[in-house]
Amino acid sequence: MSSRAVRAYHTAEELIEGERSATIRRRLTDGTAYRIVKVPHRPADLERQLERIGWCIKVHPTSGPFFWGE
Image 1 (spheres, rainbow, N blue to C red):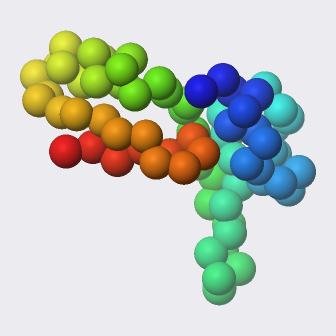
Image 2: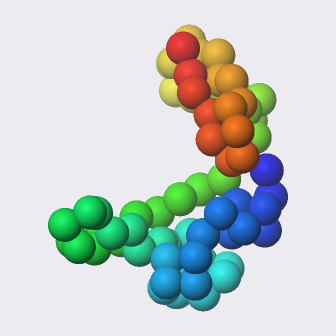
């Protein structure tokens, strides 16, 4: 998934360092804010990267830019 498509899932408040940044602000229900780094991946690319470091994994797309692995 492209970084542009991933940005479509973020609000302006979350994009604290601009649209090209992977750093995002997330707030918990208690109001606490955290900076997180989100990196978009394609399932097959993520599988290859993880296999190179010894993982045996199958990555499945879900909805939007989200995946789950087993």
